[in-house]
Length: 112
Ligand code: HEC
Image (tube, rainbow, N blue to C red; front, side, top):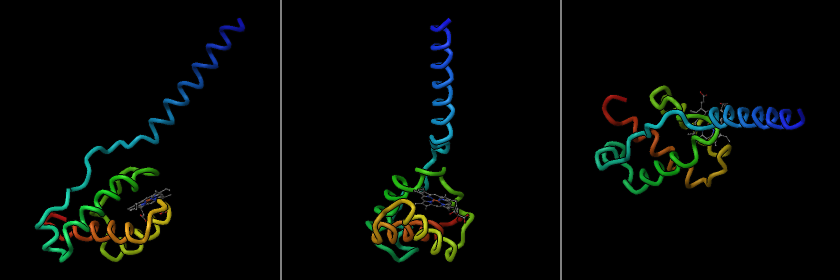
């Protein structure tokens, strides 16, 4: 009986773990567009800045939530959200500016 309880306990712990890891794991696997020369031209930004911003976004911004609906926010909304979220993510001011540059540049592309 003791062994059964132990097994039952292990089962409960395991299923809890699986349930939690399911919640935390990113469910959206389609990353936002990679920066390209056209995006940089339309936004009047350096391609290297946008590439850095895309990298920071992909690495730092889906730790607490899934990828946000990128088209939902206006430029001015992103300008407030990005610094707030950068503080959450604990990234530098420079990285925060790169992320914002990428988020705004992406919106310059057709269809956004
Ligand atoms: C440490 C956890 C954490 C990290 C890291 C994080 N966020 Fe968030 N994010 C939150 C929480 C909590 C909310 C919901 C509450 C809020 O709006 O503050 C949120 C909400 C959002 C929203 C919705 C805001 C709204 O008003 O609709 C967007 C967009 C967003 N995050 C983008 C980002 C971006 C971009 C990054 C990377 C720079 C990021 N998040 C990193 C915790 C985080």
